[in-house]
Length: 401
Image: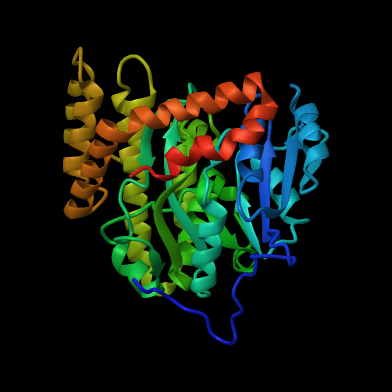
């Protein structure tokens, strides 16, 4: 891992002060925020973005034909914050179409793709500014995020495995080494891209659905490297009804996405990693999708769906079916069996991830959950107070392990 540095040909990001009084100037960052019927949640998302220091140059909200009070809520916030711009789709067009609409008008040197049911945490913009300024070769900045369920309970921290010790820039060569034993380091909630590098690869391929950003991220990482910060700088809504969740819990949709991903990687990944990483990614994604069937589906474990996604052979199918019949513990045992049969990561990375997860569950989870619940309560009861007190109330998240 390299500490990086600028050179004469690559100017660093500027965003410190604009006047003699030391007033902060906007970061040259475009935030893109699609919304559909999240009138109750988008105030939290917007306030989290608006209280960042330095502020973003622009926050482009694309309302995708909402039928609730989303538009009125967004317009009210936009009247008080000129950096917020609302674009309205007359009818619902989907997340990817909304993202394309916003990227067509974005003007920032950097771009963050936010979500109306997620929120960023204090320090994201300043840490991204510093990391990308110090490492002009990095295609993007990313960090750890807290996982929050639909009831605002904090249920974990991602990524499960880390690409490096501490914070710093990973070169393309270091990415190639690290990804053999660890993966899925980039969570969109806290990822700030160099917009031109992302535009050069066509942003996100709509044919890839919920995998579009996952594959774009690794192409950029293989070609340019990236900057990773282990601080928790975002909160991600892990909901089965989310855009990615709906795809994950449909076997036909999952198989279609995996086939599209294989085709895309064969065409776009660097030649030296194309075959090996294509196979590794497919295996890891199958494990991840089968895992979601185990933890998200209510009732009896659907062992056949899991086996189909895993491309399991006859023996593995029999074991999964036997585990599904158990009255208790079937999901846990199925996950354990899957991990033994097709481990997604190296042993050392897996053990380190389990230790971090255990530490979080024992020492950090309760405090973070209380903070999330308090923020939601403040936003619902007293928007003005939530606006004023947002940053101080969120600091517990950014100090998470």
